Structure formats: structure tokens, C-alpha cells
Length: 125
Image 1 (tube, helix red, strand yellow):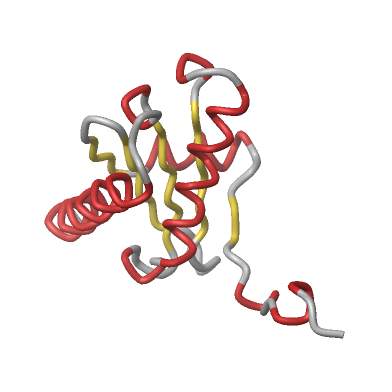
Image 2: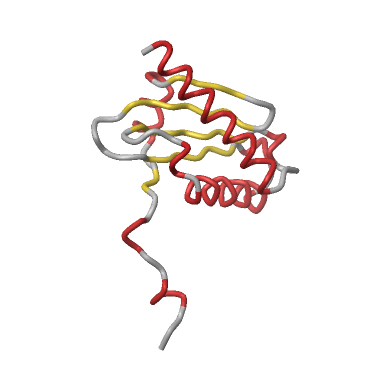
């Protein structure tokens, strides 16, 4: 039997930040860059690989809207992990402007933010 479960490679699952203390550490120690729809925080971690966290405020909309934005951002990060440096935590905050955007608009903005964040970290150390 061949189904979606058999074909998926579970070994390459993206690691997600879930604990409040992890988010707070990234906010406190990380470098941030922002654009109209997104804010990106980038912080070095201690050899734990790339880890992603997503935050969508209740101001953005009801649960269906927030979850859709979160799913789109998670898929963009999953497909493009190489945009972000290894051994770093990445937290992406979606603003209200992210609600009307499609996959490609958000991907373009996230790509530009990732480039700016990496540049900012390398220039400041």
C-alpha cells in the first residue's frame, strides 16, 4: 500500500520552537529586521541546528486566519531552510498586513528579511 504516510521522509522534519522561554531568549539576544507584513528575529543557539518559531497575534484575526498565516510561513521555511544560517533560532512574527498576502508575496518578503538579518549579524558580530 502506497499512501502519503509511506512516501513522506520524517527524518528531515523541521524543528519548531514551542516554549515561551525559547521565544524570550530569541527576543532578548537576537537581531531583528522588519518589513510591512513580517518581523524576523535571528539568534545563535548552542549547536541545536535550525529551529523556527512562529507568532501570529490575535489582532491578526480569528483562529482560522492565524493558523493559515502560520501554515504558509511554516511551509515557506520548510522549503527554504537554506535561507537561514545553521545553528540559529529564527522567530517570525506576522503582522496584520500578512493576512491578505499569498504564498509568493510572503516568501519574497521572508527571503529579503533573512538576507538582511544575516547581513546584520555578520556586520555586528
